[in-house]
Image (cartoon, rainbow, N blue to C red; front, side, top):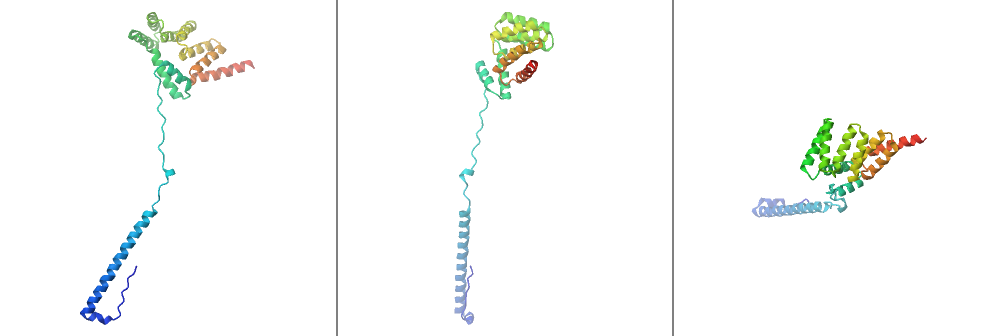
Length: 231
């Protein structure tokens, strides 16, 4: 905004009254100029405030819902229910490991100690010592399914398949869901040339543990072999 001051008589500057009148005009003009600048500044600030975009409610990101952490069941029955329902191999492996932990735990520290020694002896291929230890365990705890399973494994490692099958049957009589014993039985039956029976045992294993990779691959392989044998 421009403020223009016009003077009709330039000679008025030459006397004191004219000088006073001139100063009054200058002061008035300056005041008008300051008011105009202040108004322009306020108007500019208001326009910026009004132009500020309002955030779109639909564009605001909602918090991402995270899946609850997978919790293992406390009991064997609960763990087997999880094992049967999960198709995730990582989760299934966690469930499997917990089941093995519960299977190996007996109600006796002495039994746990002896079975631990037996596993160590088997790992060192000291089969005679392992057998002696497991025999002692089974005398102390004849209803301890995992001791029967370990002895079945020991017989399998010594290629004594008949004895291994006998101990597997004792294991399954105490714990029908023992997928370790079932998979061992299937392997033995296949080595003995009984592929159809082995396939049936693998089916039983998958009914308990659907995500078991070894069982899945064995079923696919035996089904293909038996189908080819019929042609």
